[in-house]
Length: 221
Image 1 (tube, rainbow, N blue to C red):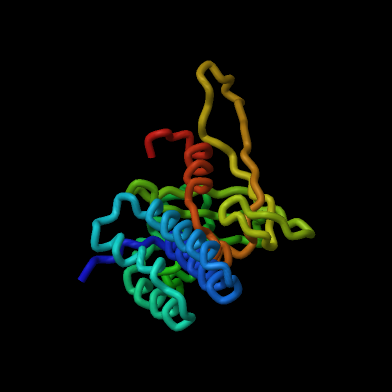
Image 2 (cartoon, one colour):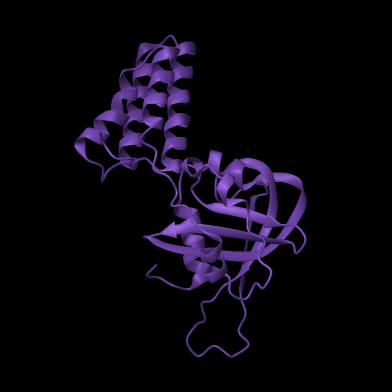
């Protein structure tokens, strides 16, 4: 059996594209349009798995042969068993990531279904802080920053979906050469209030990884 190779954000993308193709098959009569969408969906999925083994690519590209609703559902169900879990973390690991936070309020780690996690995020409402944990190149990294609720929905910079968001502001550890000792720079973005919702929506980790590089100041993470 092929070991899990599909990350949560990749599975989200597959679901999104498969739904687009299914909707096209159901609503568009022009065969050329349907085939164009079919080709586009197949290409985008394969681009996501350009480093995968041939047998793995064959699994995901089967979407290009589907036409009926039950076929799409069976396809998604069959791929779900190949979703790679986010490596579980412990409270001790979290405390090591945030040694300056004396009373770190960790989430209920035992209740998390790590199959559907791209990043681990949680809010500490009492202190208006948000924490983000991510495995980057097999290294566990984390950021914490100020979490300011806003009164409107907007686009989350991580999942690129229109959701209830908050302004997340983190102080970067990077300092330019010859910077003064009191150099300070904060990076702010709108992020989903609910990290579980964000993890269901996210289809690309580029923004997340760019943000982590900027905040940690480590180009070689």
